Amino acid sequence: MQACAPQPERAEPDRLVLRAVWFDDLPGWEADDHDAALAALQRSCASLEERADDEPLDITPLGGRVSDWRAICAASAGLEAADQAREFFERHFTPYEARNGAEAEGLFTGYYEPELRGATQAGGRYGVPLYARPDDLVTVDLGLFRPDLAGERVAGRVADGALEPYATRAEIDGGALAAQGLELVWVDDPIDAFFLHIQGSGRIAFEDGTSRRLAYAATNGHDYFAIGRRLVDLGALDREDVSMQTIRDWLAANPERASEVMHENASFVFFRWLEEEQATEGPVGTQGVALTAGRSLAVDRRFVPMTVPIWLESAAPDPDPAREDRPLRRLMVAQDTGGAIRGPVRGDVFWGTGTEAGSVAGRMKHEGRYWLLLPRGLDVSAHLD
Image (cartoon, rainbow, N blue to C red; front, side):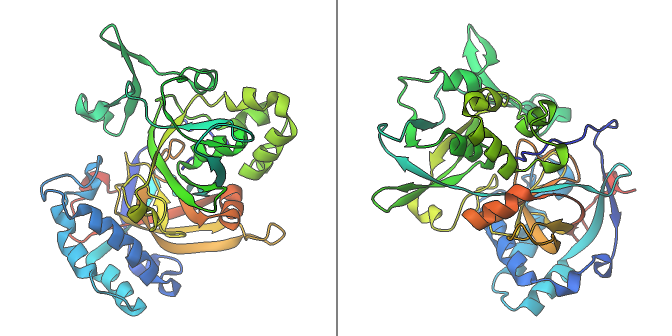
């Protein structure tokens, strides 16, 4: 759930600003398949069923409490027709234009579920391990100690009573976790493994024809670094040409330097196997629900809560690279996050599983804007323009 492309630095601090609008103000609203978005929202609603009513919806106060969503989720149950879905959203939500300070536009990228070849034992072509979360990895939610740090986390290991940084990608690749029995599976390509870390989840195909899904478990706590930035600095790629495909092609064509460049991204992801019942529904995002291709959006939880429907206006690459980009106007649901997804107007669109989804996701780096759909009557005065 992380973008490969370098992003410009902002001079001003990030600040979510909202402005109430009408549904008629949402470009293309009437033409969307609202039922597809409703199905994604129902998955988020299912994740709220066992939570207490007075519990905050997410780490930002913007979403209110779980109780603010009970009636909405109850009303969503059983709706199937597209005309009912549209009426449902219009009855229960108020749309708000979202801005980052004075800026209405932000960067929208894409991600997908890659498929890798793997084996349960090392040997032959299978020499790249994917690891489970280490027992000594400690993750700290800084918001528990200082409210102004809500949404910020650090990770490391405890040594002599103090938390110290965990091993980097380079150190782990160099054997820092060897002989601990953490290997979940062995894959046949270090570049594929690197991009699996960026996507955050994937499917492993075994030689006997079976497959299993891996999900994100934790990171080592180091900041994510988009290696496309380093390739631009080296003159290997032009900024406008950076995409998952061009980065992958450069790494494959320069095996003697590939490890060095990949190690620039010190962030390292640990995985877990999905249980069979959950795995059949699809890859799982941060909210703990199966993602819906073309309808699940990764956002920055410091500003946008999980479960919130979002009307997105941007563009997306055509599956055929020779064709022009397509307009992207659709209702999505915030269900995931990513290390590179930072800011009030920033999103990562989940495109699905496999080669075609990867082709679209890997080339998506488009400007766009969005509107948050929040429950009617919810107090959002702290963010109003």
